[in-house]
Length: 450
Ligand SMILES: *Cc1c(COP(=O)(O)O)cnc(C)c1O
Image 1 (cartoon, rainbow, N blue to C red):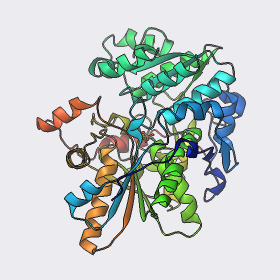
Image 2 (image 1 turned 120 degrees about the vertical axis):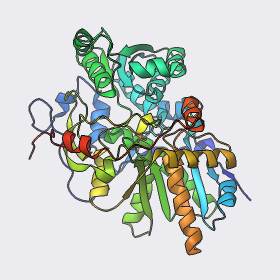
Image 3 (image 1 turned 90 degrees about the horizontal axis):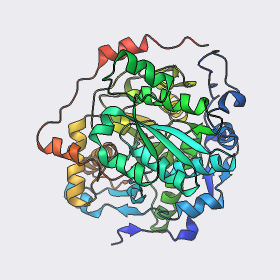
Image 4 (image 1 turned 90 degrees about the vertical axis):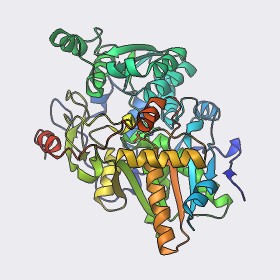
């Protein structure tokens, strides 16, 4: 009864899978927020180094992973694929459940998979410092550790309310050498103007993005880095699905359904995209993204052009969106509180290649607790959405008496999120109503393009 399916280090993928040449239909252009015209590579150069801009639009199906990047990824990759025997037993399901465990990375999530190549390409392009933002701190700690490997300075604008509430994430970033500033800060015009009006402002991800983007755009030696949504981020995460496919083949398995939680789309893309290629070749396989019911971008959003950030400084993309000024309720899965979605994931949903479902927060914590009591790993609140999805599929298989194979991505552990579990056990977690009115209001502010 094999439980952990492990790949030797020399089977760490040598190439990323780029889904762009295999996308169904034409891809929409990315639009400049100022001119409302399609962006050119030159427009993006103040923010990103050229190799990443090239990856953003590349039509090469396979892109080599530089050896310098593989050397760092090897510190924790290939990550294990685990057969959830104990969870299957507890559910009494005939389904086989496998999960890819990305919590083995030093930051505890999938995010270093892209932080490392982003830092590397910045280094070879001559960048001295990276400016970025973080909400709950998972991306900030990933980019901090990656900068450390390549001798880059790192400035992280951390949403002020999280800076106070998540002191250990801040400590992790500082330990990995980053300069962490509570946002809004007095380091940028964006931050100063907000503090002038409202000295006690607790910050938001939108404000923190604006500060990091301004910092990068106004310093010649500084570039910006984003932890999700963009095509090159989804590309870097495909190591997850590529490894999983090999690991499943080692035990003669292939999934009937592939599941990931969805915030901006990167860990979902990572596990799903390599299997979408099989689906295009005629394999029968369902691919499902799970998102919070209180921030239901894919299931209740509109497929339209919208800004990537609240302050309308980031490029405009065609994606599922709840509106750039939508403020989701304060659920504990902080990494799933984004108004938009990856344009690639959005187009695949629009074309009917993938499915999306929304789940309530308490149902996810119930699933997380069952998982922790069977498989023992404490999941990140974000990842619990994927666990919920896998459990629903497994219970359906039981009802139908079907032996199906389920693969999901366990995007991270919850060791730094124990206050969320405390809140759950204290009965303080609530399910928010679907914020219909707020979404209707924010969707009336979309830019008019095309
Ligand atoms: C950030 C994060 C997510 C959400 O981001 P995606 O880009 O949608 O993957 C999910 N799980 C964990 C553990 C995270 O840290």
